[in-house]
Amino acid sequence: MRNFSSDVRKRNRTSLLRHLHLQGPTTRTALSEALDLNRSTIKSLVDELTEEGLVDESATSGSRGAGRPSLLVVPGTRSTTVLAIDIRINSVSTAVVGLGGEVLVEQRWALPPHERSPAEVCARIARRAAEALSEADHRVRAVGISVPGVVRRTDSVVRDAPNLGWNDVPLRERVSEALGLPVEIGNDAELGALAEGARGVGRTDSDVAYVYADVGVGGGVVSRGTSVFGPRNHVGEFGHMVVRHDGRACYCGCEGCWETEIGRAALTRALGVPEDLDDGVLVRRLRALAADPVSGRAALREPARWLALGLCNLVNVLGAELLVLGGLLAELPPSVVAGVEEAVRTRSIVSKATAGARVVRSPLGTRATLIGAAELAFERTLSSR
Image (cartoon, rainbow, N blue to C red; front, side, top):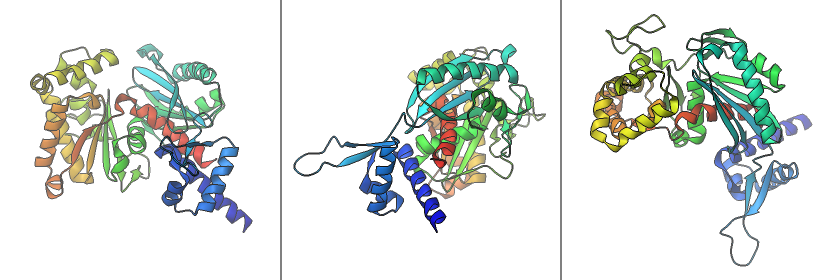
C-alpha cells in the first residue's frame, strides 16, 4: 500500500511540474482544477516542491485590498535545466533551457561539409556543450538532440541521415559518454511537431500535421492530442511523397518527391540565389517578399503550387484540422500562405466536407527543432522528479 501511495504521489508531482512547465505560473486553485486534485494535496505538493527549490510562490501583480493576496505558483527556471542540441545540415545549435521553457544560454556554429562525420560532430558538440554548461552555471539534468534523419526508437541509433551522410550512428551513446548525462534523440521534424504542441500554435488543436522544410522535408502528426510515431518511429517522411511524375530525381531513387519541389533547393531556385546561401540571408530574402505581395506570389508560384498539392494529400489522408508550416516554410510571405490555404480548402475533399483545414506559419520558425529537443529532454527529466 505504501508503494502504491508513493507512486501516486510521484505521478502527481510530475503532473504538477509538467503543467507549470507548459502553462506557466498559476494559482493553487487553478492547479487543483486543472489536475483534478483536492486543495490539500496541491498544498502538500507545492510546499514540498518549494522546499526543494523546484517552484516558488509570489503574489500576483493584481492583488489589492485587505486579506491575503493571491499567490502564483511559479516554476523555478534555474532549478531544473536541460541541454538542447539541434543538428542541421549546415549548422548546429545548442541551448540551455530552464523549467518553464526559458532559454538561458544559446549558441550556434557552422557545420562545413568536411566536418560532418559523426566523430567530428560529436567532438564539437562535446566542446561547445562544455562551454554552454560553464556559462549556465547550474546543473543540467538531461540532453535532447534533434537530428535530420531516421532515428530508431529502441536504441536511438540514427539509422539514416542521408543529407549528413550518416548510417547506423550510435549518437545517443557517444554524446552521453562525452557529457556524462542521459540523452534522448529524435527526428527533427517530429521534434518540431512536439514543439508546436508544447509552445506553438498546436497547443489548442488536437489534430495537427506539421511540415518542416530545410534541405530535406519531413513532418510530424498529432492525432487527438497525441503524437503519432508508428511502431518503428518512421511516421512523417512527408518529403518522399511523390507529387510530380516528371519531377527531379531524389536521392531516395524516386522522381518528383515533395522535398524536391518545396525544400531549400526549390526555394533558392525560385529566388534565383545559390542553394548554399547562408541560412540567415535566405530567411531575410524570404521575409522581404512580404513587402510586395504580388511579387512574392509570382516569385514563389512553383513551390507554392506543389506545397498546396502535398498539403491536400495530407488533409485527405490524415484529416488534419491544422497544417503548420515550419523551418523555411515558416518564412513564406503571408500572401503566399493564404493562397496555399485557399487551394487546400477548395481542392481537398476532406477539407470541403468539414469546416476547412487551416494553414498557418509556425511562430517558432526555424527554432522549432531546437525547442522540440528541449521538450524531449524535459519529458524524461520531469518524469523522474
